Length: 174
Length: 98
Image (cartoon, rainbow over all chains, first blue to last red; front, side):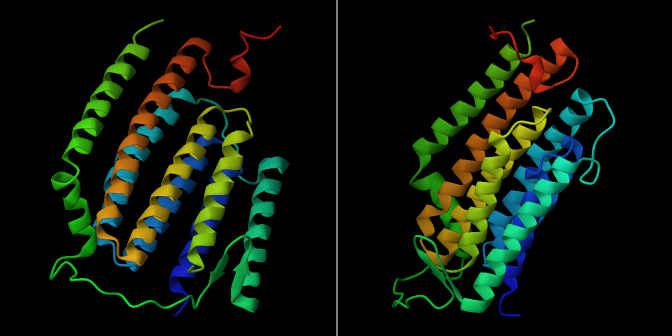
């Protein structure tokens, strides 16, 4: 199971093709949900458990839920799935063919070189440093947002507040 | 570079192409924008995890915050379009044609 993370990233690209081929938005939302789940599992398999949880809670649980009920509110018709339209099916098959080509290239030659080369066995460097002790690296990094990046937190919080005010203003006028 | 990066960059490019090519619904373009944000989040996170550069984990969090703001404003605009025209078809946005 050496290429497990690579297989997960292939499924990530396939589910991205699922909504980039532009079916009806409700099916695109399903594709984005699946790709969010697979993206979380890529991040968790590399050791970033806190950030994977962030993807599920904030991205899927917050933003996708809002997308879901806005789609239900703003769209009323017969939704077209991936097989209903030649254009959507053609775009999906084109994307899948391209991904299959890239996977075969990677598996046969073990290196893909476009502008930079993506190799399995890159250069090995000596890794030094005192590390973070018994804590996970990614939780420590996010906690650094509140110590070194406190001004960034103030700016981000203010822009979120301004975002709410902007949304209220946009949806008020007619 | 590890080979997962090429798949994440391919996913970003696929979403970008999907965003730039309109079909009938405005909502599906917003979904492609969300896909771009998700792929950038995953790319930034696995870069920080691979390089063991602990302080750069603030980048995915900040990216997610501003992607949330952008989603909110985009959805508010879509709701107003759907309010006025009944559906969110892109062909309804034709006030500036000659």
